[in-house]
Image (cartoon, rainbow, N blue to C red; front, side, top):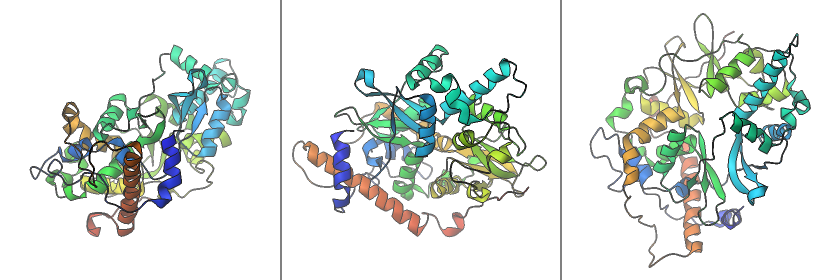
Length: 422
């Protein structure tokens, strides 16, 4: 890890509270009209990626020589959706990501190969046996070569810490990925992983003064945000292997679980859920049985997993719910709890900043107004202190906002959860 990260962890507890250098209320960010749809994009345009850096975070890096079955056990042990990959043959350079999507690919490959050779009961696949399979004993490098031959290997996409947050949001959208490593331009190491969730939290914290914008108080359906037709769902009695196939091949990362008769949302099954259930159980089970356990956490109440809003609620309300509950997606439901739409983080980010602001990437943003006076170029130590201050203040403001509630009045910030009904 870079020297910057060492300084970060050694000094974060000694930070003094000073004004963040994040620009939020400059002329560039203030709304130009009551319906200024570009305002949030300008907020990201004038702030750089390092300003969204958490004061503490976990990055897991695996050597590509690690065996696949050990890598998947590592994903579960670290309770993470992804790990960065380093290649010792190129000096430890980061050149890829291994995620739960890869895990699902391996599970389905083993399942289908067993079915192909004519096993009478291929569904009786205990995933603890993955270490005995050929693909489970490949190292990560060999697995990636296999994926490359199939034409499915994606190159690592990253962004410099000095790039604008708008650049990062656009890169996420262009590459249809959920996360991107932020790279220290000084030594090429990864500082942290920037996600849609982190970007939305930044917008929510520093864009609260934009809440009165008129379009924010229309419903997501009116604005065309999210999926409102052809929604992919599964039922409690859907076979797990069929659910995994949808997650892998249909471009969705989470599936609402609904009642067959009423389409009332009773749960949510995501790609991340596949890690724990695959290591602990078999594939010849239903979605309902799979959801009885989440990762290693044991039984989990469904009303802790399903977060929803009424389909008539405002877009800003949906944003508040996504941030307040730290979820990747929420369901829009009708009065009876039946599903009407699904709104994801990527839907929100694309609407708020990518679509209205992508043209700003070719324009030089205004010069940063630093929180303290300086003459000439600052040295590395001063720049890193500013970076650390921003990270600490970002967390402090986030914690304060969570403790005091949303920026909206309480009657606009309520939410509904729909417990299971079996």
